[in-house]
Length: 492
Image 1 (tube, rainbow, N blue to C red):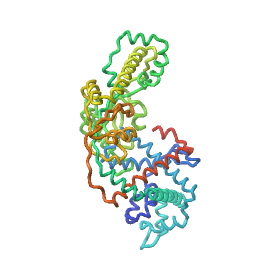
Image 2 (image 1 turned 45 degrees about the vertical axis):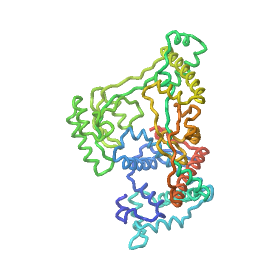
Image 3 (image 1 turned 30 degrees about the horizontal axis):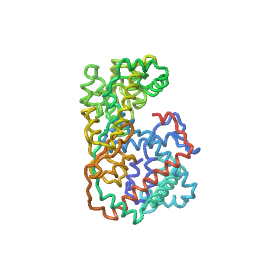
Image 4 (image 1 turned 180 degrees about the vertical axis):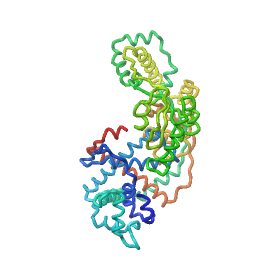
């Protein structure tokens, strides 16, 4: 369908046509089969169809594939939560459209007609052509009502976004303050460690472990630890496999050639030459250098088509060619592990030892915290002695106006501590907590650089604030909305 659009002058149109371009792309995208029907999500009673979700997912896959230069594999799809992102985009869009209607933002039919009739791709000899429009609808397999309804929703969302952008414009005093903050560049160093580093330096005698395990008052702690770490004691069925991927998007011109190439490779494969063939022929950059080795994986880690073939293929055997959104796979199953479970009684001594070490580590950290106010440099030396691999790390130069510290994130506690550092007070006077880690901060340098041009600063600040306002507003809408997602989709 995009070929039709390109034949009609391409996608080079003014900003006013952004909503219609989005709708053209969505409807022009190759459609996925939808044998199950149903909804991907229901937002305040309004359904988002599975077909809408599948089209949005395809767009995101194409987008990330371009960014990653074609190196988007199954693991990346899961790692970057692309399926969840596709569904969340549709939910957010629906919420924004609903809210726009609720506060009285309207898109009259006349405005939709004006947008459609002004699109160059739907014109002939400089005038709107109804025949061309009907041809587009026919090729897209969509009615005019559906298309114009979707365009109206996109236009509503676009109006809301413009309102959000306008609300983010800073005042003159805010610009002056921001200019000052951005021109000041700070550099600090940090020592980052966690309780595990401390615990590894501790010892727990057999007598201490037995005493802890034998004390009935510790039973709730032992049970709680077991429940929290159950994933360590209960192992699901898993498969160890290698694979060869020949990339080709479904419906692409390369699909047939890629299928034939994969089938030809499969004919010459054996367990003995699979790894060497994968190193030469596979298009999966994440596993190619390892002979296609994917290690052990449980259900839910790979795309459904790949997972089904891997778990159904016997150990020592090679699957037939399997197609997924990424292309064509050939899978060699090297091993399988059946589900297993270590009971609470079997794990009791190991858990007791871990809890004894944890208590010792907590006492040590408490003592360190008390020493920080008196001699933070000495505390840093003690910590580095626990693990020879611990080193001071530098944030590099940054502006505190960025509201995050490079390498440490946007923790308010850390930002406040950084703001208090100087040559006169080079150390933060206490241990800082960041997730599961402890931090020691020390001052390194502060410089002043030339400020940004006022116009450029205003544009950047407006964009940043608009994005933040939009995120906060979207979060607020989600929190009060009734949203139900299809578990088969949300869990993929």
